[in-house]
Amino acid sequence: MSTTAAAQDSPRGIATALGAYLCWGLFPLFWRLLASIDALELIAHRHVWSLAAVAALLAWRGGGGELLSALRRPGLVGVSFVAGVFLTLNWLVFVWGVNHGRVIECSLGYFLQPLASVLVGRFALRERLSRLQSLALAFTAAGVAWLVWRTGSLPWVSLAIVATWAPYSLLKKRAALPALPGFALETLLLAPFALAYLGWLAARGGGALGHAPAGVEALVLLSGVVTAVPLLLFADGARRLRLTTLGLLQYLVPTLQFLIGWAVFHEPLASDRLAAFVCIWTGLALYGADLARAPRRAD
Image (cartoon, rainbow, N blue to C red; front, top):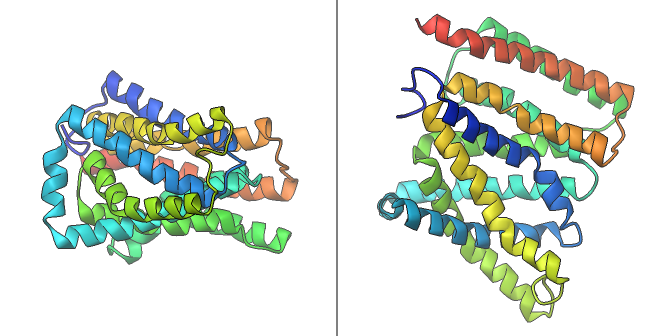
């Protein structure tokens, strides 16, 4: 059962999707434990160990045939490679931001992502915007503009997250591969570069493995499982839920990240910054209302 074909939401779908979003929302807590390791090295490890974890999942679920079939299509391999590069950059910005005290700024980027996808659909796919979507974008733009005016600088971490995720989403739409084989292909294509970088670090006597405390090394090795488990949960939930439900549930991720940055890591939240967030949250509320109306418009 595909997401688009789902007539109603199943309890299992809600549970697995919530599990995936909960994992992603709590990611800052995991990556902060690895703050002693350079972000680029962490992402290299994430690619390598994610590939190992996804390969095990494909073997368990019997999805290797789709991956082999994709490897025989040069155009699909090219699109997946570019998508993997954007995903790598997105990971890099996020992990760097988390480990440099910018979790709230990272959460802003993920709050902006759904509306950035609307813009991509408008200009790249020629999709028409509804009135609520246009109003949502106007509130969002006002929030970002207010933030820039009051702080005197762009929220570059937030915008970098959006700028890397929006093209990734577009490329994933064009690749049209299921979540697990698609992610496996991306990590397979990028893993050789990650291994080369880790090998170069090891040849210079550096790198976390063999030099970091045992607990840190164990967390590095777990990065693949931490990446793959929510992906598997999401893939199951996406098959059992309507797109509208998935779109609304995804706000759990940046909400949790925002709360972690503010309440756990005690990042500053000045009134000017909060006012910008209120504008952006208003835009998201309008976007959510438009999503909720979508099934009724289709009837």
